[in-house]
Length: 192
Image (cartoon, rainbow, N blue to C red; front, side):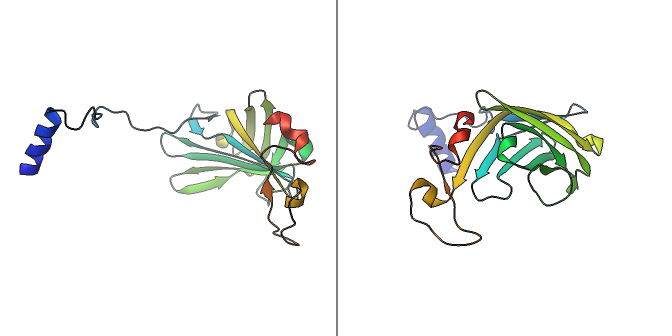
């Protein structure tokens, strides 16, 4: 009780400076970089679409979207692309391992994860690192349109950037070409 009285007195005398009132502060909210709108009007929000290019990849590029609704449901898409498909494409959706031109969409609600049985996902990259697209999916209740920001990263073998080789075979480490200076990444530099 004495400690509470001392804190209240110290606060009223200005000993703590201008501390924010924790009761009146709005809660922290993650920035929304991408919005997914379901056919029923449900809104899902998330970070930017992540697009990664891999010099030794199979698939060559991998794109992923993850968004959450206010009620806790989650909508996500992951799809493989060839270099020709990176700036915009239509990919098939199936429950199969990822490959170029193939992907999957999941909708998670009430602890249950449902995968797209079939359908297509079309997207295009616009100026200012924006993306827009549509997923026509079976079952239909997971179909959605999306728009927002994307990030682009490019991964290459070290020797592609004049660095020493770091191994042989599967699982050889790749490094990020931040400047898109390698011959593999430079054709995509205009998209970053």
